[in-house]
Structures are given as structure tokens and as C-alpha cells.
Image 1 (tube, rainbow, N blue to C red):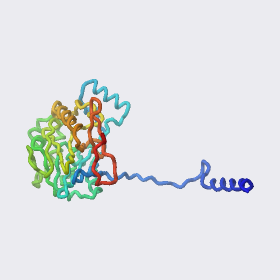
Image 2 (tube, rainbow, N blue to C red; image 1 turned 90 degrees about the horizontal axis):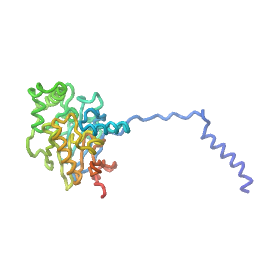
Image 3 (tube, helix red, strand yellow; image 1 turned 180 degrees about the vertical axis):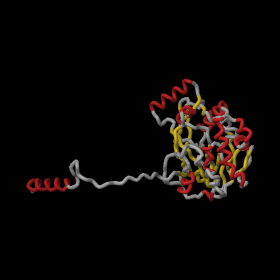
Image 4 (cartoon, one colour; image 1 turned 45 degrees about the horizontal axis):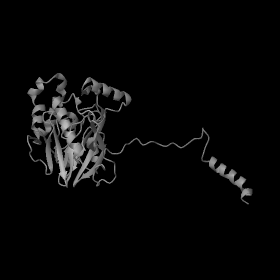
Length: 333
């Protein structure tokens, strides 16, 4: 019985399949592509704190902005030849919701740096469910435009109208000084000009505050002086329920270079020796401790942990999860 009906059955099957599988010139319905990317935020829990990374943009760190021995720089060029993405960087700000306050740590470049490659932080903040008007405090690691440009529009308007801005007095006194700016090299003039324009509306509104020691600004947060990059370069370490997150500013610009060779500095470091020494000391400590790191120029979401790797250090980024209230777990040892 089966053999007798098998040939007609196969013929019918082939005919049916032919209606689904056309020849090489068969027309297929157009499938539109969707060019929108996922919203630029990622959040997790650190104890009772909600920490949200806010994407501002991406760029490429110019190899000429790095300083090191001839051998080290030859190594960077060789690495770039093998992988042109070695110096890809991001710019990221972070929102800490304590349950009582909404605190930004650095705010990206806005329109003050990067020729349009940045300036997405405010949109990322809205995508994350917050508005600029809801921000209470902005903690600034230093006054370079890629960290504070998001504070102010080009026409002098405060992006965060209700926020009090806090920055180290040493940084504020340096970058906002007309006398120091006048004596600075020509190439450095834009750094002073942007810092002064960005700070101006907050100074006028009485919303600009400085600190010079271990003043308590936010409960559960400690100031971490990180000398070398700028006169008042400062990190902020938050603690909650035995967990910690450190916002380290510009300890690392080029993660795939400076983690393996911490002695390599950036031309933007005002004190090159101090910057290298601070990086070495901090990386050594963080590789031993269970501290989540928020690094603005690490690959988004710019959150992870350090571990020792050969003569340098390795970066273990947080693993994506759609359960926002899951703490960023330490790697299993």
C-alpha cells in the first residue's frame, strides 16, 4: 500500500515545496530594517542604590594623545595595525538614585567636545525614566569638557536647573581663573574657555559649590582624591549594605592600553608622573577589593571590575541582565 502511493505523494510534496522555494529570480517581499538602537542606559543595584549608566557617545582616542616610552608607543601602533578598534572609547555619565536624592556623577560632553559625536546623555536620562529637572546633585570628577559639557547649552542655559553642582576647589580655582587661563599655552585655551562658559550659569544661580577636604556632601559617599590628571581630579565612592561603587573619572582613558601598561599617560594629564602613580596605586587596590568601577571612558555600560592579568590588569565588564534589581555580582574565583 505504502509503495503504491509513495510516488504521487512525493510529487505532491515537491510541488508544495516549490511554492515556498522560488528560483533565483523569484521576488521576495521587502523586509524593512530598523535602524534604531536600544536606549542608551543600563542600571543595576549596589546595595540599596540604583546606579544607571547613561550613554553620551563614542569616539576614538588619538594615539598621539598617549605618552610613553618609544617601545610602549611602538607597541600601541602595532596593536592598532592588528586591531583598529584598540583605542575605541565611550563617554558615559552615571545616575545614582539613593531613594532620597538623584545624583549625577559627570554628565558627558554635551555639545562642547567631539564635534557632534557626543551629547546624548540627557536623552539617555529621559529614556531611563528621569528628567533633567529631577536631578538634585551633580558630582563632577573634574572640569574637562567631556565630563561637564552636558551641564550647559551653548547659549548658556542650565540643563539641570534644580541641581547643585559640586567640584573640588582646586579644580574650580584652576580652570575658572582668568589669570591662569591668560598664561596657559594656546592649545590649552579651549579647556579654560569651555570650563568657564559651562560653569557660568550655575555660578550666577548660586548652584556651584566647591570642596577641599573630606566634607560630607551625600550620606554614604566618600571623596577619593585622584591627583595628577587635573589639579582637583576626584573620585566618588558610594557604599550601601556592604557593597561599593567607585566613580573614578579619568583614571583610564584607553582601557586596552593603560590597563596593560599603567605607566602610559595622556597628554591631558597636567602632572604626568602623579597621574601614572595614582593609576598604579588605585589599580593595585581595586584588583584586590570587591568594588564595582564606573569608568566614563570604558566601553558602555562602563561598569565592571578589575583583576590582575600578567604584568597588568584585566577588565571584567558587568554581564547584561534584564533584571535591573539584580546586583552586579563579583566574578567567581
